[in-house]
Image (cartoon, rainbow, N blue to C red; front, top):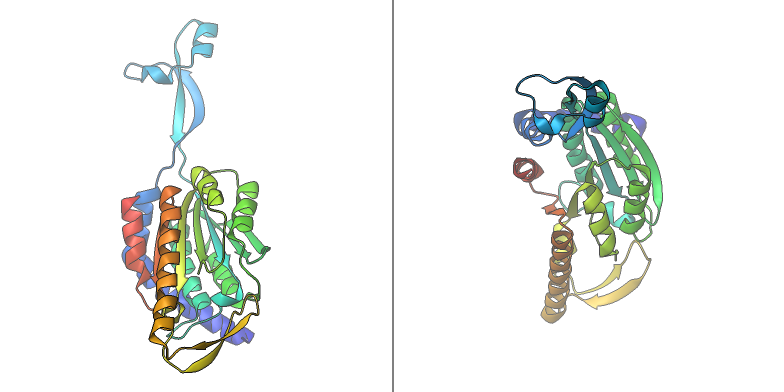
Length: 287
């Protein structure tokens, strides 16, 4: 895309997502994540009505009178958006490519976080981590994230979700909200999901096109795996072949859902033609 086309596309996404965000998501996001624990602020003399469990026993013993720890709510959060930029994500047969759909969802999440004064960061990955945008606040930063998702070079390589998660956990130690976007077409280590889910609040979002799950009857066709370069010829007129393909996709999805559930992580399966705002609204409401 030319620069003027990129700017136009980013602006269109901002306009669309801001309406959805302000109408539905921002309030639920704020309610779900307005406080994530307590942090020490100061010590002061004990006052009637203070909780006994807040007493600072060391200082109390030193000064021979009771002191209590004053705690403040930790309000600021960090949101990390991880996006699979393997070649299969640069594909679409309906209104949008997967990458464009991801950019729009990321925009809604980003503007919700920005409205809550939270930081947002981005990791673009495929067979390795290709780009990292450190967490920052503000509208301009969110627009930069949208632009990077749209304009990334989507590489012909198998996605390594494990490497992306391991990298993210190595860099960001503090508990964060992690949104993982992929079509999950490649193998991954389910143990990494469990480790990541213990450290962070993880939501996996499988973005799929309707043709990912079912192939129409178009006779003999050459099918190309854009990530590995492998080609096969298939008789798509065969009802048995189409059924076997569709069933294999269903089994893969079931295994994916089970992996996330057993890891205590959240999961969404989202068609590029569906209304993601309702799914996110329900997710925030549950949290």
